[in-house]
Structures are given as structure tokens and as C-alpha cells.
Length: 309
Image (spheres, one colour):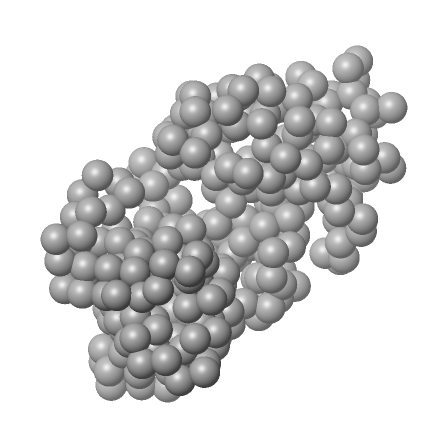
């Protein structure tokens, strides 16, 4: 399962990480947590088959040990405090493992994607926000408060004075996320007819200097932040995913240049690598999570009362 603020996707994933049919439904976030859990359960039932367990990658800060949402943005009202694991276990009659969706994304890439075989992986997911995940020996590093990975809230000079979604100012998310890039383009005098980041990227590809400068500023900020993190963590691999990563050379070139400029000499050969699995990575990673943490997820378990037929 991949639970987001606007849509929720489910798929049956085999023991080799192969993804079967995907069912996607709207996330009824405005209707509250109970409605979201019911939608999730409905998506699982719609898949059919005999699942052994359910792995969930969810928006929000997740306590995987308790299966609980610790905090969440206003995109999902009331989601903070939701007993995600126990609620789904009651609805589905199956064992459930849960984690943050970006962590699930990283697990998916490590299992069957671009990070396969890497021991330590730093992933940056750049889309509506800027999230991250650190894997060590195939396991998520959650931190003392389950908040590890919030690399979008590193301070960068390019974002000085800009408000961030967390309530602070000057963070990389405020200059490098998709909405931030579009807002920067408009502040700089971009046309009001440009309504999404894809249009900005298309203009940059066609040689529009304002669009190219806008993408480059956000990319440089992110590259500098990632380079600094790489110096601290010394990972085997740094992965880049999310919708902003599709902005083309006008974004990738300044990103890579800023990243390389920050690296210490021993890390000089470390490169930024695009994610491979696309939007399905979190589903693959959620299945991996279930296999890592649940008893014998390779064998179907009997459905308890209330589970899918």
C-alpha cells in the first residue's frame, strides 16, 4: 500500500518484488482517518488473491514499532495519532507493517531498483515537498524520534527568508520543491498562464532564461544540501526521485554541479543516481517492509473475521 494525501494505491507483490495489478483509489482525507482506513481496506479487497501480509508506506511521520502516525500535514486532517497498523489489522484480518512513504520508496529501490546491492543509501524525494531516507544494510534509519529523513528542512542560503511548510524559514524545501519552484518563477515575472512545473521545465528546455534560472536556483540549493549530507554520511549511493526529477537537464546539470562542488576529496567519485522504479517504488518497498518485519510473510495466513474474501 502507498497512502498519499490525494490517492492510495495497492498491489500484490511477489516474493521476488514483481508487482501485479495495481488498484488506485482517491484518498478521502477530508473525511477523516476512519474513511481513509476504509478506503485502504477496500483497495486491498479489490486486489483479490491471498495476500500473506500488508506493508504500508504512508504520508506523515510514522512510528513503525507502534504502527502509529506521529504527525502529519494539513493535507490529511486528523491523520496524526491514527493507529494505522491496528486499524488495518482489524479491518483486513492480516498482519500489517507500516512506515513513512519515502522510507518505503527507498526500500523499494534497494530491493529491485537502482540501489540494489548498495549497503548505505541516501535517497532524496523531490516533489510536492522534499523528503529523504537513509538505509543502512537494507534497513531504514528512523532516528530517536522517527523523524530522520527530513532533509527538506536543512537551511540553505538560497531560501533565506522564504517560509517553509514546517513553519520555519530558509529551508531547502522552500526553494527546491515543485510548488516552490513554480512560485519562484511567478515571483520573478513568469507568465500567469504557466500553471504547473511541467510548463516551467518545458520553457527551460526551449531556452527560456527565466525558467532555466528558476530551476537552476532550486537545483543548486538541493545539490549543496545533499553534498553536505554526503560528507557527513559517506553513503555508497545517493538517489534522486520524485516529480521534480523529471525537469530535465536544466535541473539535473546545476544539481550535479553543486553536489560535486561540496564533496570532500574522498567522495569525489560519488554521483547522483536517478531512481529506477518510478511511482511504484513505495509499493515495492512496503512489500519489502512486510517481508522484513512480519512473521513468515512468504506464506499466506488464514483470514480472520472481517478480512477480505
